[in-house]
Image (cartoon, rainbow, N blue to C red; front, side, top):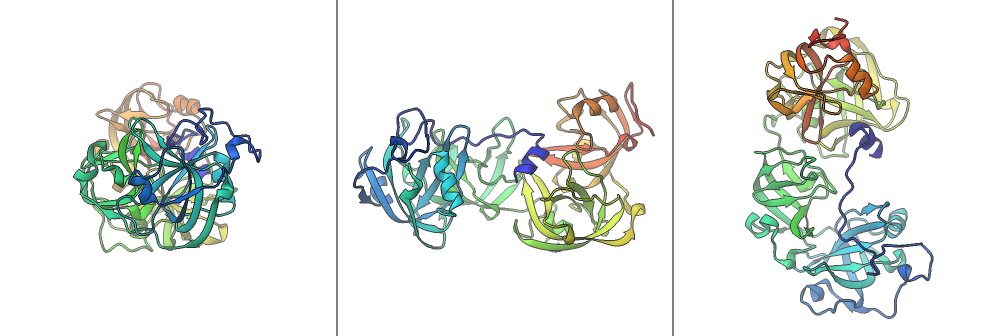
Length: 463
């Protein structure tokens, strides 16, 4: 999804914080020249066979060269090529306390494992490396120096998450026996949503959640029915790392249980798991291509209520964007990328124009107060009769009184042309646009200067 990262976030991304700040050899350099036989790729002498439980019991000395047999990989791999780091987690298949362990390595090692499709979630492995108690709080980790020190010996079901109370892992504190284990907590309420300011971490009933694998599109007040993931002392604070869609089970407020997976409303309301193929018919095009191309927005105007709009994103180049008002049938997958719901198109053959022109149905939903815009409006075409906006903040004019909601420019090629066309700080009347989401920030995106009537002093609207 790297193309979407560049396009949706205007080239801005946050690299995940890795577990350590030094190379697996412990020499403090993090250097790795990929040369076989150097100390950074050494396989070591004869390892001692131990279990993860032995490590948690304190029976393995810091610096011991060890082998752990029959563990299961419980997470995807994280990696940071620039800092030459990579990591993942393993656990005993039975799960529970004292079952999990953090694996820390070099970028080229995880790259080689990925290339060979080794050490993927569910793989049973024998792994050899040096056991280290990292940081001043003694984080147990195995430092892996060579991809050949990982042997896949089978596959199995992932460990059943160990159910704990929120109090057991809240406030950044947890029993060290839970470090590295897959845990679950139920019925928590979001008290802090992910944002740029908190590095997209969020908190529910004191439980800290890190989005390095899976970004949960949650807001303050949401009820999380069940949260699962690997527990890790992230910068010393015990945190849960959800790994995929099923690890964060919740429903957006306002969704209807009758909505099905073959509707936009069902896709928006998490009725279908991500990466599952769906067919949705009778979609109507509501936008041109955004600045990053190969995408546009559609809406189901036969739907009653909210959650009826969504972005359609093609993973191939040179998508032909149908005209606004064109009716379509779609086959592809549903995803949620950093808060933005998407229909993923894999081939132009999976987008069928019905021949119907429904331009008369492309009527925006009127929103009197822009501060009431919410998750339910994402992807929809809306209109705002009048609103005051503040000064331009990068590419967004924030609505007065609701700074995380504004008027933005995804249909303009660059910020300078957007600033030139828009009217600046002041009052906007009869504004029309597509509601988009970036992390937890919402914006109304006019499609051209025709999408507002007047805009403060110096407005260049052609309407």
